[in-house]
Length: 194
Image 1 (cartoon, rainbow, N blue to C red):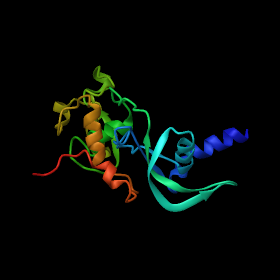
Image 2: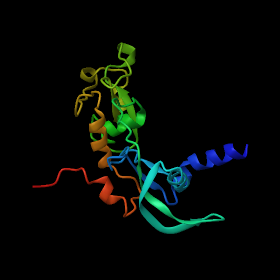
Image 3: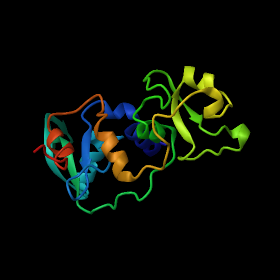
């Protein structure tokens, strides 16, 4: 029971609020930009002691055990390279990220939901190619009508995104908290302006 509690606590999103560590792949790129690959400080310290990561930046704060004192890692690099995913999971969050968190009918950024371009009532399926982010007013206006019947137009045709496209979209939507030690590692692989 004690082990379960500890594992549950470490994996809680609230554990990321204090001193999260940015996790980089062995090539010094983040494992993921969005959601940004972060570990709670406890996981980063554990991985360092197990020699699975190298610590490349630290917070000023320390943690202590009976025998040691260690500065809390702010950036860690995996020692073994993890191959990036070949496909993007079809989730509500990834759909919104693909559509850059805006309605594909009016361009609005408020209260988003998703809409089947070809309604399910007319044989439409739930897929990357048939679902778009939509604000509530546009979704209600469209209902189970086709685009022509509703008078709405798509800003861009829905399609399956590549992992690279999703990483690029993710860079444009940074998390609420960016520690200064992360910045060099988050944007080092972006193209420089001429």
